Structures are given as C-alpha cells and as structure tokens.
Length: 318
Image 1 (cartoon, rainbow, N blue to C red):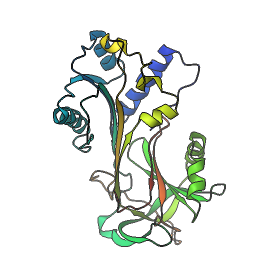
Image 2: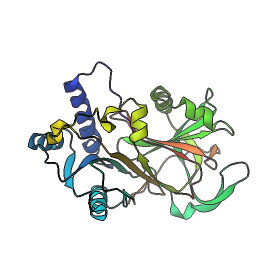
Image 3: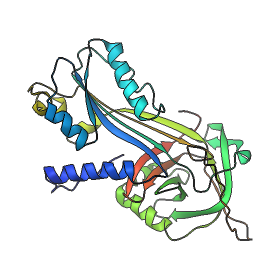
Image 4: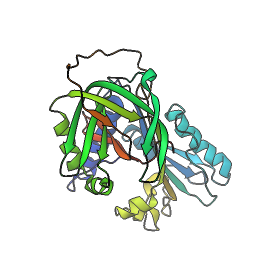
C-alpha cells in the first residue's frame, strides 16, 4: 500500500493528508473491516517524551512502547502480541527474530476483510488445473459463478481486467495477462494505469461465467532497503534526528517491518449470510478463467486508494 504526497506539501499539509487518509480508510466504510496502523517499539533505557506519545496517538493514530530488547523472546512476544491483537488474530508471528542491539523497531500492518456483493456458491467450487508456468500445473480449489461483472480488455497491455465488488466502497480487480505478457503488465503498473482500469470498469456490467481460484497470501517485508531506495536514508543512519521521541540525539531506526494478509474465498473473506439475485440475459455469457498467474488489486473507491497489490503465481503456495 502506498500514499503519494505532492512535493509542495509542508509539514502541516503532510500531517493533514496522512491523518485524514488514515481516518477515511479506517472509518469510512462500515461494510468493510480494515485494520491498519503503525507502532514504534523503543528500547526501555530511553525515556519517551510525553508530547511525542500524545502526538503520535492523537494525530497519527499510532502508538509507541518501551521494549526490553535485551530479552529477545520477551521483545518478540510483545511485538507479535500487539499485531495479533490489532488484526483480530489474523496476523500472527509478525516478527520471527530480533537481536539485543536493537534500539527502535517500526512496525506497519494492514489486514482487510470484506464480503462479496455477489458471493460464490461453495457447492460450485471444484478442483481444477492452474498453470503456474509452461511446465508446471497444480490443482487448486476453483470457485465458479455465473453473474453480472464489469470487465475490460486492455489492448495496450494485453490483459483482461475483472471487477469483483465487495459490499461497501472496495472492489477486487483481477488482472489476467495474456500468455507471456506478465512482465509487460507489471512494468506498466502505476496509479495512472490503475485509474484507467477503474474508469473503464465503471461503464457497466455484463454476463460472465467467472472461474477464480481460492487463495490466501501473507507477505512480510523488511522495509529498510525499500525506504532507502525511496531516498529515506537518514532514519537508518547516524544522521537520524529522533530527539523529539526520547530527547536523546543518538537514536536511529534499527528495523522497519510491514506485513499484509489477504484471503479470497466464496464469501469474500467472511461469511456473507445474504443471497443476491440477478437478471441474466438468455444468450450464453463469455467465460473468464483465472487459471494462470495474475495480479490482484484491492481498490477503495471513496479514498481512491489501492489497499493491496499482489501477484499470484501459485495459489497453493502461501
């Protein structure tokens, strides 16, 4: 997940954008469950400045904690328990290891739960082939539904795009590249490309026989290299100035982690408990089979944000 800020944003503008964006994503949609947040864990020898604790909670909806990194198991448990609690137990074992020299750990997490507007019938799910590559075929639980969906074929990128709406303001976009075109589509992924797809999918729905594999993906990223490549280098070096956090000048981020989890099944990611009836035309609908590597985006309409972006090469591998 990413949030873009205009270059001219000053400190107040940047704070306002970040804070407002967080509020909108976490509170805008009662039909969705979106748990996202940040937390700082700082070695207990450093005393946290009260103003920082107040600001990080009231303005950025985050938290900061004193942590005994000298006890590796205790520190790991503290961080893992925090993330598990704030994702309803869906993200566990966030941190696998940590060392005693750690001074400060930045944690970012996101968990999404949504219900399909048009759920699949579990009785229609059957084992089917998924072509990982030219030589590898795996068996996957393949969901099936005949219904009305927004679809588009991107001729420039040689890919099919299908919109699967959740209740509320979010939708899953499945991007299925033609054979041999995955790299071309990946290289073109950008906000303008996503917005082009969103616009094209808003023109109406048509009948589709849709086959989609069930899957669950969990990703853990060590953000140090990623942030440094984006130019955020000082925070990990001796040039860092986090004196506003502890009053101590010699403090830098030791590690930064991000973890995301997404599951796709017949009901969305939670049993829906409702039935949707649609009027279907008499002619045979086209068939879209997601039976080869594809991309998935979770797009939030109200905030125009991409909450998740993932590549599914093998649905049987988590």
